[in-house]
Image 1 (spheres, one colour):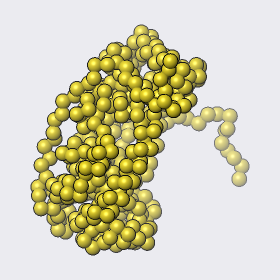
Image 2 (cartoon, one colour; image 1 turned 90 degrees about the vertical axis):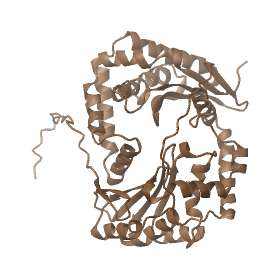
Image 3 (cartoon, helix red, strand yellow; image 1 turned 60 degrees about the vertical axis):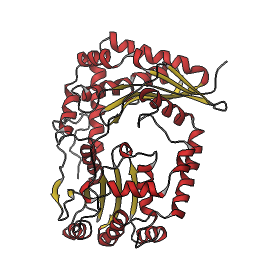
Image 4 (cartoon, one colour; image 1 turned 180 degrees about the horizontal axis):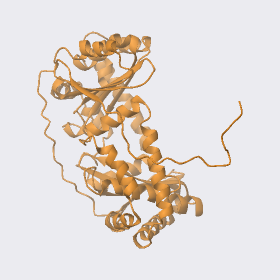
Length: 432
């Protein structure tokens, strides 16, 4: 059949008008647990996330939240840790345990036909863990080994040092565990934290994939019949005072480092601020993609580093503007100097429409790619839930990108890209 397409003509470009993502269907299970369902996809698989407000902000001992979450897979009244691993492996399931500042999440990927069997294991993990001493000692030792590896890494050292300098070492965002904190943690710490926060009234379930009636029945029967947990969680958000160090430059020596790790950062606005979404556009232009100002100048033109980036790291009630790079020790000062030069340019020279359009197209493309699958959509809606945002956030994000102007970029740069507030943190070999 002859090809009737005129290949000498560029096909028309369609502009994305709306970011209309599939919303979850929200219901409540018989035991009172909220359930959000994304029914999408052709493969006979699903993912279930149990989200608890049981993050690090609520612990009264360092590592308490992280290890409580991590130990859920290490044994229950019905299954040993080996049996949990064996059963999930037998049914082709995959388990992930994550813990952030505010939330702990237990994630199960499972084949639909074995959903009931794997959910039974998951239910046992979150309702009847026993925190066995032998497995706890093994997990502590494994994490201590990981800490030792991290402490030899200049990127880890600079990241930790930056957050400590911005928030203060008594603030949860700036406080990091040492070896003695691992050694002093006990299973009693974990049991008390579990009893307080792993309850059905402090749980939200997210379900995504090809959700058949059989899957819904299994989730309802296994996870949604009886309440669990004896205590009602106190979900009052604790308040912590930010106590930044006065120093502008903070140096951590690593005498055997081949490269130095540079982190520059400042505390800035959070998700709910009216400027936040357009600030993301500015930070992307500044250092958020391969064609950014920082990459073009410092990597491509000057060759001081293989890579440099800028981004916004979000925390409850605040964010951190962070600039990251690794370079040869002799180029650190030159990198800092050029970062400030690019900030000055954004303060004084208007961003061209051509450059801004390129950034907008990149960001819109990333938005589209980020929510192509059911599990990616699930990630997006979990983000909305844990960040306490409204369902219109994605549409507002697209609108902010499309409506950003060169005048917006200049105003935001002058207001939020401030050289005086940026901490400069270096980890590496001391230069003579």
